Length: 248
Image 1: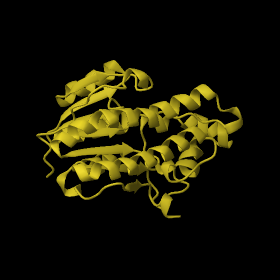
Image 2: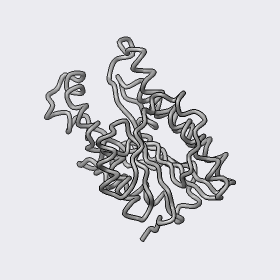
Image 3: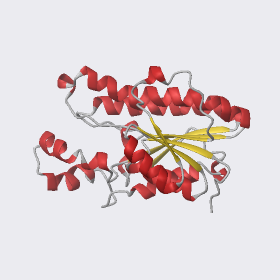
């Protein structure tokens, strides 16, 4: 069993979906978990359930975060949103929001967390990327760009932090049945000209060799492993959980 009883973990977007599953998994392994989310009520609820603390924070306001010090052993950059538009119709403000939240915020938080990790000689940065950090899809230019950028940040962090005993890795899920994915069903149906019932088979599972979606617990289990001492020499890598999508 993985023992994180001496560790402090910060999970962004920790109040729902993958973030909630990871917060629960880290807490079950003994970690003190900081549940960071813009939704104060949900963050407090999750933190209360797992014996952690809530941090209500708007990660899209990166200027307010720059210069903050984070004394954590494990940083999970998970918070994210999705917007679907063709490039010619993509609102600039939505493009900026996605890239600020999903690329700039992870940079700012990593910058804030590394000094204390270096001082301890131990740390884990886990970036929740996506299959879209490895592949592209039409109408998701902002999301794809942010996730590809996050992969670059992951590799650079790994090279700089590795000699200090700190690893940085990415988890690249395909579609996981989370609230964010459920929220895409209507948009995907409209964009692709299909029914909502057809979205699961044709869009969510269309690239997968395995006829099922991953569960949030699957992602949490991998994050837990990457945070453990058993993963001490796994660094700068992308871990796909996509049913074979990236194998094609």
